[in-house]
Image 1 (tube, rainbow, N blue to C red):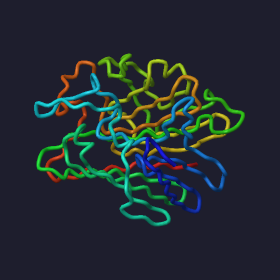
Image 2 (cartoon, one colour):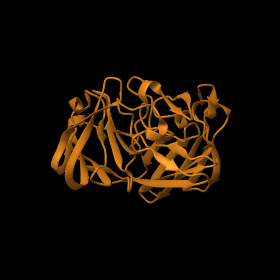
Image 3 (cartoon, rainbow, N blue to C red):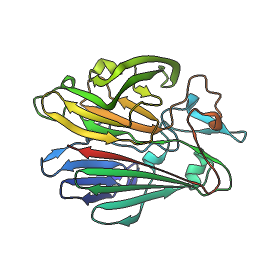
Image 4 (cartoon, one colour):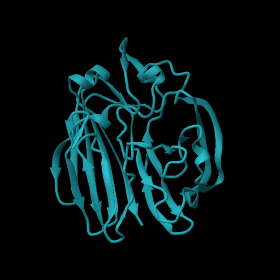
Length: 298
């Protein structure tokens, strides 16, 4: 398959229960298929709605103010969610149930991002769970600034005869779930509103997303479940230490994105300097960062 002139190779890993496909471009999940139930769980990327399926967000999450930032007195352009989603990843190692894909800086990335880096993504299956580990290495002498996040989109409704409104999200813990506002330009507006007060359930309605995503900063729980009132629990996402969570779909679309983030889109009042970006990760010279999230199919 060709994507933007780049040949896409699709890799397959399997357990007794799951078969997972990953594309070489963007190290993007292409399928999470449950063999026992004969069910596909990942959104299939229909361009009539949204052609993405599970892009990796690096070295930024969301939009940057005016699509750019400054570092060391220079200005750099940066596309929404960064450039990893369109990068070609190579295989570092592989077994039947595990694959490690990686990419690193080159002449093209340095036009957008002046840091030397290695980004490794490990996909590993164990029974009905898929773990995804991001490892970022600063290969340069300078402090490196970055964000990283996931953007998996799941089919919703998942069963025939159900509607989007039959589904809900349930956090593992009760709490106050407060969303940041999102401006028309896709930036954080600096105000907040309550989505859940002292509870854990978000009934899914498309009008929740009329003004873009729900963005939870310092989210009170580290696990979330996608459930149907008719058919029960579909899947669980354990995002462990990730501080922020985005929930998104397009109004009317048959999918829901559950997006754990180390980072945030720019606030509308951001000064443009990457080192001052809210929740930016600071990685010292030759330092490493790693984070794992786990998707479990029920």
